[in-house]
Length: 238
Image (tube, rainbow, N blue to C red; front, side, top):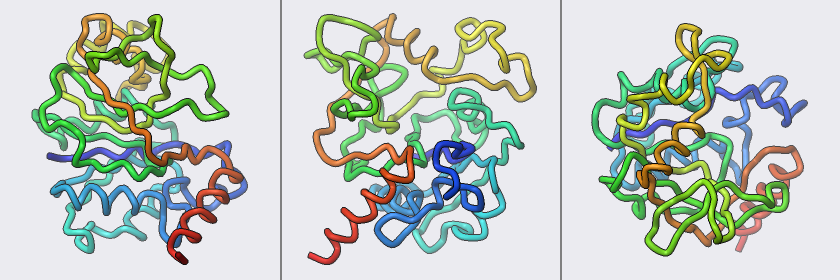
């Protein structure tokens, strides 16, 4: 299985830390955030990883090299000065990812989730990992039913998408019909979010999920990064 790491964000909420460093390359627990993902992906047998980039893109190959230190082959896709969003970024990476299901993970999160728990062959177009709603996102994103299917709404409480999932390329097959002429979708390459495609697939009962009850952090502010760093260093000290 191959993997995609979303690393093209501009890191605007993390300034001034991201004035000179892309957010996925900020350190927590003694290593860049993205390195935690690379190690976990390599541990479950992933051998090729696509990393999409934009802000300070040259720093990624400078720091990560070709991936051989983790027994990985890294492919860098520079999206230009304006990122393609999650949907456009995934579409742009498909020529590297191939026709089989692949893992995708946000480069600005940290979690102790074991990628070995992900299905190699999702039942539908996607399989997402959900977590309890953090304080900064109390409304959540999706509803996980008792059969392991995800819905955009429902009677059960919403959970928050963890930024970790397995996707089939078929999720993007009809992206134009779902996205329409939204701003950015007519550019070349197109720029659009993934969430509308996921919600469309959920409407057809085509997205499964699981609830991760372990540790997870959306590293969206300098304060959260500092807190995560202290937690990880404390765990190493013990």
